Image 1 (tube, rainbow, N blue to C red):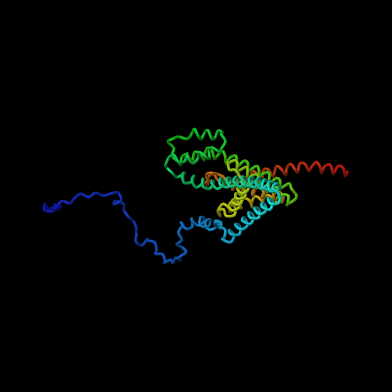
Image 2: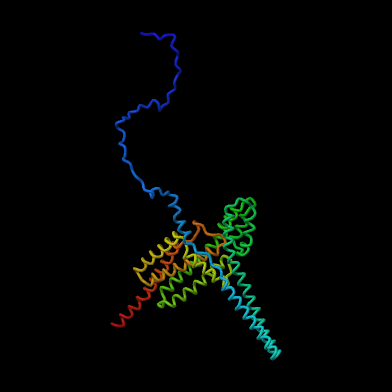
Length: 363
């Protein structure tokens, strides 16, 4: 055997890992064939992020435009009419004073009473309109505080709102749950989960009751004009009661503004919400239309009433709804279907004895 030479240097020890000991049986000939070149169009490179933002862009594109201010000509016309009324009134009082002091006193007394009454009504309506406008400011402030880690501002913000609500169990539970260790976001969350959830439950019950009544009235009434009058009257009453639940007092102009806002929000609602709600409504109407056209008409009117009520809730609520607690029409149509089925079954049970009586009399 050949002995190693003494002059050859000793090699360093090598450390092998497990991956180095794996025997590869790969054969270059077994490699996959090279795929042919593929050309891509520019449209193929649309990123998923832009697709996910598409519904939001659609919602932003259909938002209502801001209300336009009066033009200079319209403003001058209104000012001229007011000045004309004032000048004519003063001239009439002066003429009556020259004719008879008693006649002047009578005219002046009546004018003072009417002016005082108009001033009181104007001030009350203005205050109610301001209170309604404050709701949107409250929603913006609550959204900001829901992300704040500071302390103290939320309690000051919620104190006047809480004072308008009745002193019930939910209010006492909220006051007991509040602590000095809670930050603004936690205080807003407690107020929404304890106090507003109780208000929301009352408002939903009220809306469901009015929706069921509207559905039954439309299903039972044979006159379309009478149906529309009843629905309009009932919807106005529902809006007043929903606003009262959230401690929002409505006057004449504030009620008109709220109704306009409700209609505007329904028209310019998000595309996803519109598709979902209309799909629910059309499917329910189609299913019931196969049974009875009048039942389908009642269901459509009831769903419309419920949609108006839910929009009134969202506009009167001091904290805006989120995607988790926002009421939806899908939770209402089952209740309306049950009410209408019960109504039709009762009507059919009443009609059967009449038919039997007519058959007996004919025999």
